[in-house]
Length: 330
Image (cartoon, rainbow, N blue to C red; front, side, top):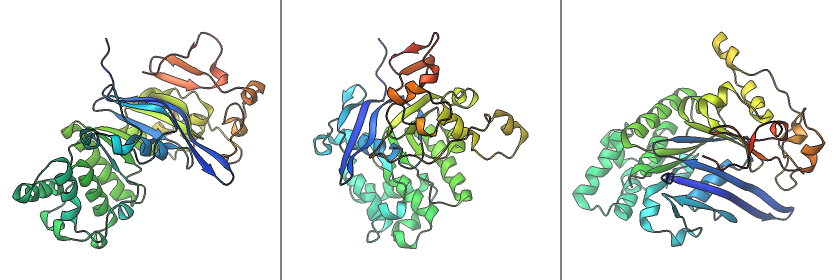
């Protein structure tokens, strides 16, 4: 019998009520995360990718669906989650400035998870703070600084150190470098890759940057208006993209070499912008921007197709022939 994945997200859905109606922020999303793996969740703003991360963390309770950690279902109510589970799943938020308390020193910021999850006190806790700073390439003197005195890159490192304080197995990275300069982004990403290898971490990496995902993700899942469009191992994803939305995103990536240009799919144009999640299109949600949409795309939700092992697509254009439909995601 196959061992349960580290994290198993199944039919996850989140509805929000608004004065304009019901917002279907996430609608039936499923994927798995294995040990020491990085799954990239990619999509435009409003696709629901961050909401998926918040539901994994318990920040936002799901409307329906399940999340399992090592085969055991995680309670939707975060107050009912056992402390060990909270210890094992941590998050790095997109904006470290907003997530760090300006009234707490860096030492106090890092001591809090150490006291809650690791039961450390006194000298042991001080040593642990210094070790966390070393891990994220900051000197011990930073323990006495305030977040308000740090640069954006330094704040990002502190936010990562805080997430690692409880020695988690899964870290949700919600666009952790989006607010940083390009040169600083590269340093933070390289550090995250090194930490994953050294500490055997598994990442759910939320981003809108396809080029970044190519370098860090084991598998990539594309979201559009709360649903998955395509999910595949990274190499297959870039070499044989199948969904029109995936092709549109990949063809928009800037390239600087002839080799990169040869790998990029032919330009796929689309009309308009992502519709409002309050008023999603009928049938396939991407049909209003897809030049290849047909009548069935307007009438029915696309079926799940596993084109080849591990490569999943939700598209009517691929639902004919000898494709395998409805198979469980792996």
